[in-house]
Length: 192
Image (tube, rainbow, N blue to C red; front, top):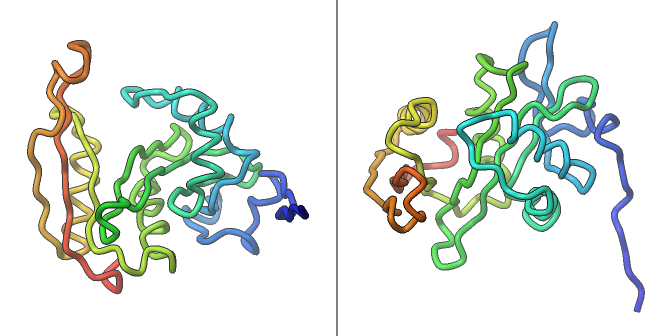
């Protein structure tokens, strides 16, 4: 059995306009958005840890996202290759027109740049997402930053936004706020 592997490129080398999907930010502090790779798992883990109130998953989970789900995730790096933003999600197997967004994290250095929106839109405009016309996520009732992001996305994409309770506090073990299912769509990808 012959195994083929993609060439390994360190994160610092990926922080270049020639391999980034998008270059955002401003001239003094450019940010590079791209698909994650195996070298990014630990950096993603460290980023999420620095972004309360996000739930922190294991470093292994972020490594799986960076490899097994790389086509539906994105990282943003600065010129030094430091991960300053991350979005994870997947296309639902039982609803292939729906992308479920799991987490969005933006580090302190990149806040106020519109990076969260740009990360989501970078994923949503990939060829792999051509048949996706709905975006779903869960948000706790008091997470105003996430509510604001999803309201802005719905407005930009000219699509309805609906929400309902999805997981109760009891279902989450009694130590977590309830999570509302938030759905944007249908939308046309040419509006993103």
